[in-house]
Image 1 (cartoon, rainbow, N blue to C red):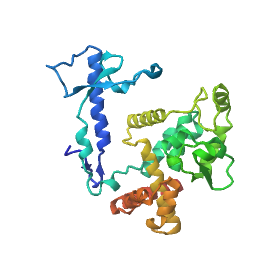
Image 2 (cartoon, rainbow, N blue to C red):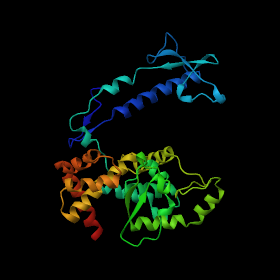
Image 3 (cartoon, one colour):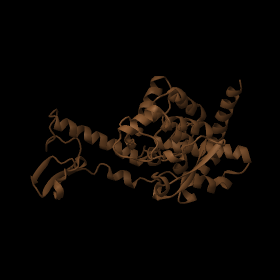
Image 4 (tube, rainbow, N blue to C red):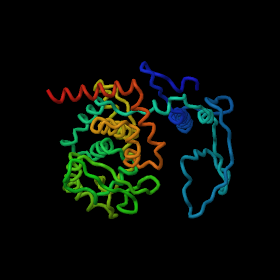
Length: 324
């Protein structure tokens, strides 16, 4: 618990109680698997972790199957089941973040890391829809639910360098947070790829197979939309591939949203000369935040001297390489 939040050589604080708690549950589930496969036998004399049994009343209305998350091992009668619970994760809820952890826990991709990701995705030559989805998420800051329900109706041939489109559940079926309508910015180069995908034979064929009609742009080969965990697993696969190529780049889907936010702040600051604080409300609108207090962490991140120095250096290095 004491080592949950750690600082690297640059002073950045890393760590997450919820992630650590999930890892503990992974270990618990592994022992449950071993028990069910009869590889080991959890008993009164052998307990790899403390747990206790609880009797839970259930309802069998409609003969609904009991959810696997209950992990029930025994059944007493039709109205009750016995579940086993552990308090191993309870201490993680009481851990307080270091004073500056809220701004330093952001993990946006650096410019060189982002370009390595794009090189790996190889969007223009890839037929993998998920690659295009990850690219769109990084370039626009969409949340995962917004990404998988991104509306096809807003995709058209771009007529400007940056295309502004509205998304929202009430206007085009895009599942935004709090059902809030908002406007996002899509670079013309990205919109071109989306438009090409929208008109592709593969997508048309997939939609014809689908039983349900919808306005979502991205579809699987059977016409259905993607599940959030499919994209999460795809990102994990990309990370593993990059590691096998000798690149130590770690990022989660939400880090791609942070990448967009910090890149946008940097570009707007360099373009207009405005301080980051003056760009706070505009970024909050783009990100779909209810309050600018949520957006403040990105401004704090960019205002951090060490972060800014490294961020600017890597941007400049990439710009110089591009000019050669």
